[in-house]
Every structure is written in structure tokens, then in C-alpha cells.
Image 1 (cartoon, rainbow, N blue to C red):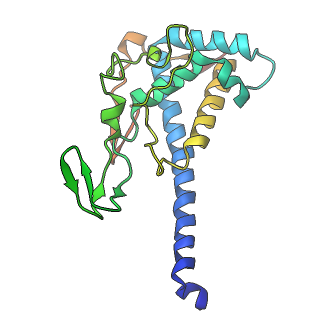
Image 2: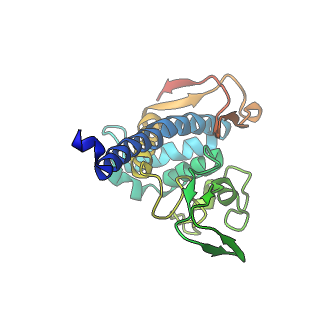
Image 3: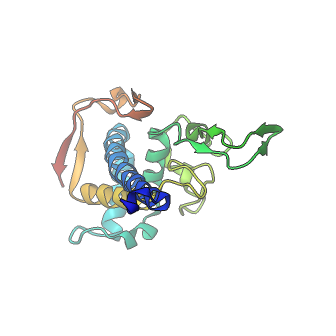
Length: 219
């Protein structure tokens, strides 16, 4: 078969498969895990959940579904979602990359074709960028006026030309799912907030939230 013997066709087929897997994994699997971790965090800090719900009520109301255009008008909610991603740190190590040429980095020579594994966790917990890196604090992403601020160390999807393909889908999903659920429900735990354990569980190279019980109470 001439098509199978063509290396360029083979490359494109493989690239398509990898791209689709990336979209599914980063845009679906990590989103659902982030949601589970986020609900646990919000039960630990009910005052944060209440403030998010207050912003939802003020911007969206209770009679229409949230839309992506609402995100720019909801800096606190957006900051909470950013902080959930930073704090949960689901993929501490990014996918491997390869150096395309001999590269000097901080006095070291990295030979061409060397595999490089970015440690994303070191950036997400860098005290130079996050005042209290080991604490959950949405203020990490808010300026003095309460507006959302960019933080160069926020890279849960990696960074650069090879940033995760599913980033856009995941960000949209997280905003819409969080706001839609919190628009209609409050979160209740059988455990007192002070006794909720946020310690992650290891799962291969990633992290997942601990097992917990949750009730959704209609508002």
C-alpha cells in the first residue's frame, strides 16, 4: 500500500492520534479530576464557595446558564479556579520534550536529542511568585483592586510552543462546570471543614484528590 509506505502520511496519522489523545486527556480527564479536587477544597473553605456564589448571582443570576463571556466579569471565580489548578498540582511532571540542538542553560550544555522533563510543580509552588505556595489562597491571582492578574509561574498545562493542546478546552470546561453547579447547589460534607484532609493521593505520575463524600444541596 503506497499510502502506508509514505513516511509523511505515517507521521500525520500518528500526529492526529496523539493530538486527539491530548485533547481527550487534558480537556476531559484532568478537568473531571480538577472538579473533584475543587469541590473538596471549597468544602474545606466554605467562605470561598459563598463568595463565588455571590459573584455568580450578581453577574449571571439564577435564571440563565453561565456563558464563557461571563468569565471576564467574574475575577474572583476565575482566581479560585486558577488557584484550584495551582494548588491541586495534578501533573507535577510535564510530558517529556527533546532538545533539538545543543543548548546552553545556566552554564550547562544539554546535548541535542536529550530528553527533558519539565518539573511543573516547582513553578506552581515557587515562593517568589506565590506568597503562600503551600496554602490555598485565591489572592495569588488577584491584584490590589480585585482584578484577575497574570502570574508567569502559573503553568499547569506547561508553557511555550508545546503547551498542552487541551488547555483551551479544559479552561472553558472548568469555568462552565463550576459556575453551573454552584449556581444551583451548595456543597455539604459529613466532615467538619477543619477535619477535611486535602492531601493528594498518588496515581502514577499524577495526583488525585483523596476519597470523600459530598452532598449537593439545591439552593
